[in-house]
Amino acid sequence: MSNTNGHGPKTAVLYVRVSTDEQARSGYSLAQQLEALREYAAREGYRVLEEVADPGQSGASLERPGMDRVRDLVAAGGVSLVLAQDRDRFSREPAYAYLLRREFEEHGCRIRALNDRGDDSPEGQLTDGILDQLAKYERTKMAERTRRGKLQKAREGRVMASTPNYGFQFNAAKNGLVVCEPEMAVVEKIFRMAAEGLGLRAMQTRLRAEGIPSPKGGQAWALRVLRRLLESDVYLPRTYEEISELASPETLTRIDPSRQYGVQWYNRQKVRVETVSEPDGGGARRYKKRRTFVWRPREEWVAVPVPAYLGRDLVERARAMAAANRGSERKYLTREWELRGLVRCSCGLKMATQTTSAKASRPYYNYRCNRSKDYGTDACSRKAVPAQKVEHMVWGLVFGLLKDPERVRAGMEALIDRERETGIRRPAEEAVGWAEKLDECDRLRGAYQDQQAVGLMTLGELGSKLESLEETRRLARAELAALQTRVARTEELERDRDALLESWADALPEALDGLTGQERNKVYKMLRLEVTPTADGFGVTGALAGFLCSRTDATAAAPTRSAPPAASSTWKASPTG
Image (cartoon, rainbow, N blue to C red):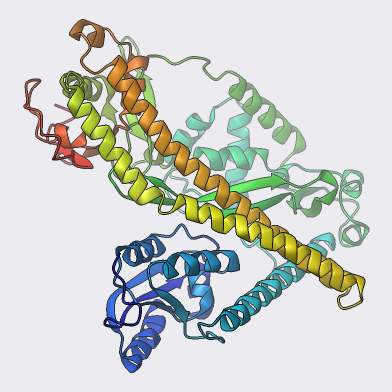
């Protein structure tokens, strides 16, 4: 693989990143970073190959579109330097910075930030590594101090929410809630509808028909918003005696024993947000935020009293009726949905199944966008797609292709190649790097304990450093698990390829035509088929996408093996006829 290695032209890739909260808080803009990097590159004589930006991306993960682009450029060769304004632009986690440095060095590329303290020598890298760990330690201490400060304020009965619950607004001091009469009237209406036995969707329809906007101003109330509102303890009145069993003594001095109060809970869950990516079936990747919620022990919860407004009987009756409605949910599917989980709206969300029926009429089956389903057509204008029509069209196109084993093999192997290219860069090397990081954590743990034993470190300092090391260990273990998942995904593709070739490819037409809806769904999933309605038909990704784009009937000629299928195609056929 080519690299400059000090003998060719000096080339650089400029990398800039800003998370949404940083941009809003300090104006730490992408333009400002790029200006500083361009000046440095011009002064040092570097030719800039590409400027890569990651707007709104957290430095707590390497799963970022821009960083993936940088890694691809470095892997292709010819990059002397990857440059960022600050070291934490690459990552806020030293373990990730270590992994990137190892990866880039193997391609003859250096990683550098304008605020580096050391040089490229082992001593310089050690200096930067130590300072990175100290910066992480300080960030951890600052976050812990902030959390403890908020926790103490909550124990004193002060509201710590960034946004007040619907039906409330902040008081003048911004540390408590007061009732917002117009919104609370809507809350009471919702509880009354629930108490009358209306389901969430019926309530959503009635609120929309009456022109009552959602908390964020939309025309339709999301079903999960209605569900959370009914379950929230801020609307359940409690007596002073009940509150005294939940709240701290400091809090009880701030409330009136003759009144009732709802409860806003603080410190109930520990939330971790991380970015993850997945193949989109078209050779690229989708990036999304994943939140992990861990319930804290019940004794760590903090109860903050808020003014009560609704009657207790009303709230309890509404909750009982809502629970009864949940218990009456259907236990089986109304039909075999051949494309269940495989239709994606152009807005990005998966389309759900929908069964509607009019009086004295047959039922209608559709695939409908979840965003449209929850929020209404003002959130997504995509119309429902008739299920029988799109299912018939998909099967008609796939049926003939399954008769040609070489097409199936070519499509699946192209998918496997793309998965390897976009999903796993250097699995063995990355696994070694994370294993070394785990060993380093074990060595540092012993060293810190030895320092504390001889009096060079206090117990408090030891605890903080061990907590930081444990976070790094958790990160390393998570990355090793992610590597195993990516390898397993490729192996699963290979198994599905073999199963398709053995079971379905070149099968008798009668056998294929006799497949049930669930069996067809299984075949589609093995082919990684995904359908997206478009303005003039349907887009498709998956193993057979390249063959479907030019197909007009069951006798279309098979492409040669030397020309693998494209990652995605569009069928120019109207789903509505």
